[in-house]
Length: 287
Image 1 (cartoon, rainbow, N blue to C red):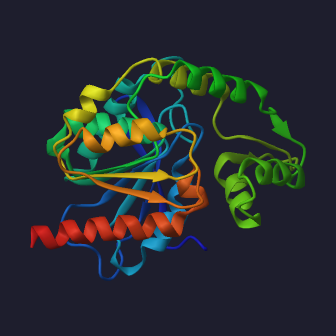
Image 2 (cartoon, one colour; image 1 turned 180 degrees about the vertical axis):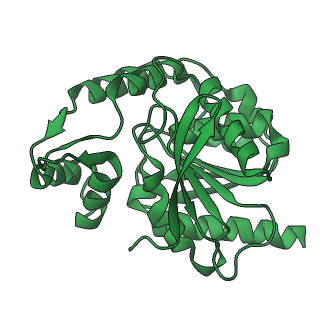
């Protein structure tokens, strides 16, 4: 799907300069709840949300996505990649926008989102957490670091990058593989490709964030809450998913069939439909 109605922004926050994308509101945009702010997962960029936002269609609110610290075109500090650091950036960005927002986060961004909604409920009209839990998980750290360390540093040409992308997106087709290349890699003048996000921030991020439990933040969320899970995911385990549902009193929960962890890449149409239904129901409640 062609990107339309999108503008790239450079935003000065306390930690430095951040890159963001802004999508214009649809002609029948939702009237309550403010704009939507999207947070990507580990190694992603704001661009991973483009397909989902486009599929929101005519009723979408204004939408923003942020390259989080250490990722894409945003500031890359030498250290400072705990949830608290990412949270401070998000809060500063929301205050820069100057209004209450709908918050959506996938994976690492979902963990930041749940903590943000817990600790700053006045900033958010609702929160959507996509395929991540609040638990500490040592084995996940080890597996993720091993995967990051094994990734090639560069790709000699587009064809090679695309072949690797096809393997990583697990048979989701050429369109998903092309999106992977454009969203996570950058082409150099000689035609080779390198990752948009350096390795060191990713390792520090997963090590610090997966070493700590955020269950108490999950229990304390008081804003309207939607939890989305891919039925084939290995990231949000079934026992954790069930505990998340039963441990809060007011929650929407949706599973997407035949999809793993990377829902924004593999199922943007499904995700857009789920978000629209959730937001429209909240809009009718406000009315």
